[in-house]
Amino acid sequence: VGFYVMQVTNANQAEMKMAIEEFGRKLRRDRVGLFFYSGHGIQYAGKNYMIPTDVSLDKPDELTEEAVELNYVLSIMARAKNRLNILFLDACRDNPFHGFQGFSKEKIKNGLAPINISEGMLIAYATAPNRIALDGPPGSNSPYTKHLKYFIEHSNLPIEFMLKKVRAAVKLETGG
Image 1: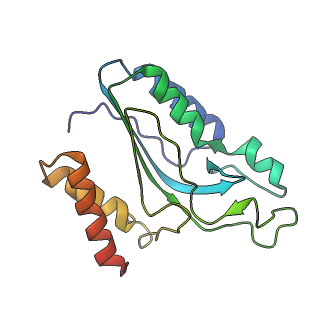
Image 2 (image 1 turned 120 degrees about the vertical axis):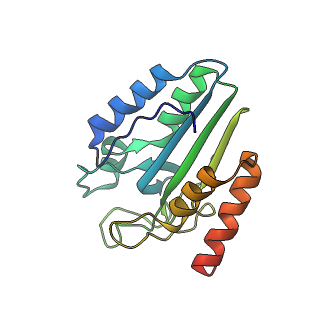
């Protein structure tokens, strides 16, 4: 649909950060930037983190050192001063650290935290903040990504109307 696409699959932390930096260099003023993340994400102490494939966590402080904070992506997008930046997040997962010592229930929550957005930013979650999104069957897309892909390819609607159709389709498929 007219975007230059960079795809990074099953990345470790270094690969994620390099790809995000390259993405930032490709963004240009007066254009539209789009960042799509599908993978494991977690909320810790009110901040959202994307979990790289090489993360092995035993203590809470390792999360902030080994994961990639979502604000890192947002700051790179903001620097471009695009007329519009879009962030699609299919990463709302439950707490994978139940039972780990030191991971307090007060700091680690299910789903992703709400994000304060700046002007010119649109953020679309796979589910509401602090909620858990469903994965798809092994080897396929989640319900959110499946419907997002369909409506991007098959509708000429403005993005806000297209996202409403995605939401309705996901709610129907997942029973709410």
